[in-house]
Image (cartoon, rainbow, N blue to C red):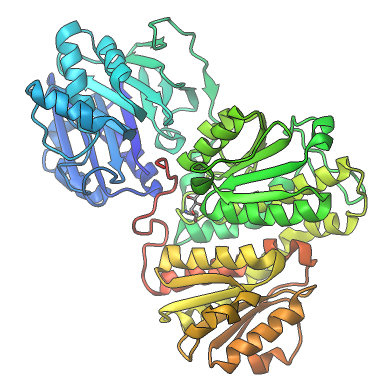
Length: 611
Ligand code: AGP
């Protein structure tokens, strides 16, 4: 969603801000802006649409703007007010001396706006953020101290925010604060950076400090003052950022999504490394501080997640119930938070999130924590807000994922659930999982085999790219695979795609079948293979265009299916980890064939930080 970058030091701020915003583009946005201080004047530059539009605006005054050594920048994903230039951040006050960038939502902005308007403030935009600019300006008029003005303003603000503020009358200073939205300070030599996420600054410094809720940082080129909401001075906790700038390069691939799909064999190796050593050794999960006695006491597991992470969680339910006999409920976090939920100290609540910043999932785990449940977080971002809520943490180690459509992080989440389920089963005394462990160890080679034949999937994509709709069917453990395959396709190609359990087809969706409807059957050998095959016959009898994704070598399939995508043989329980790869590629190639913006699909954001 929105992104923040700030810089104060001796270099030209403009290039650092634009480069930082470019590295946050993947998060999804619809306008952009920067505020810089040039010759003692705060100047705002904004543009709707892609960052290039902002670059074109500043290019007109490049020599002038480049003189600035202090600035704040923002990419906005519209929530309050349309994605227009006037609604783009930074926002300012009546006299134009303040500039504010903001991630999050000011929930009481209507009351604040009414009050500020009565006091003479003139609003230019429809945003919630503009109230902060006017509020800070009015507090500054009283205190003549920017840090204090920000502190007093935040006492009146309800909601979530990461804020960076500059003021024309306070030279060479940026004040930053946050509540329920991430913000970090990057530390250089006589310079500081601010960012809502690591990629914005990682090419400049690996030394950083995460700001916590309600803390305020005041930066000058040579100093950092760090206080809490009651003005107590805090000791900065400096960390080393475990990221490499190279992770942000496409490494020769046309899109990040394609690169990330290809990284999956190594992602699997990473996830398993140090945890699954040999098929005859028990799984070790050092990260799981959930003690073994507590695990034995559990009578229920509740998993909360959204989108792709929800599909990984559904596979988690299937395998944990199968291996451990513990009942598992999975619910979209956005539903879980608006009803009475029955979780207690005997319930393990697992939050799953690639970004660790999804607002609905954060709220869900906080609600469960308040009811006494142990919170286990499965995330790709151990530095995220959600990870900080965890009693136990499983970092999934997929590496930074840039494409909005999640691929390798899904693979890492699914693999983490296999490890967790086997670990829990072994704690409960189950010991017949050698075959599955062996299959896990050889999984990367099988994924590599699929990637080596990607041209066949590309050909299939070309054949079906002009379809208006798509149906994916599966049963059992691959039902979430059908949902995830359909989600991938609709996210990046905008084709209306739906996943169904194959058995449900005849209870309604079959009415939609005709010669224009592709039906992709996920036909993995095992318990439900024959059942899905007969559901596929039913679809074929209604003239649907049939595609099989299968590990069967049965020649008869050629009579039933127009296209067959083959994957290597695999244990049915592990088949979701293999079956998803061709579906990711199919979605990718269809979107690419249709000329869509694969890495930054319309209306989507990489992390959804609003409920
Ligand atoms: C995945 O392709 C999507 N972009 C989206 O569904 C995503 O999985 C969802 O928003 C949850 O995000 P999270 O894993 O970061 O919590």
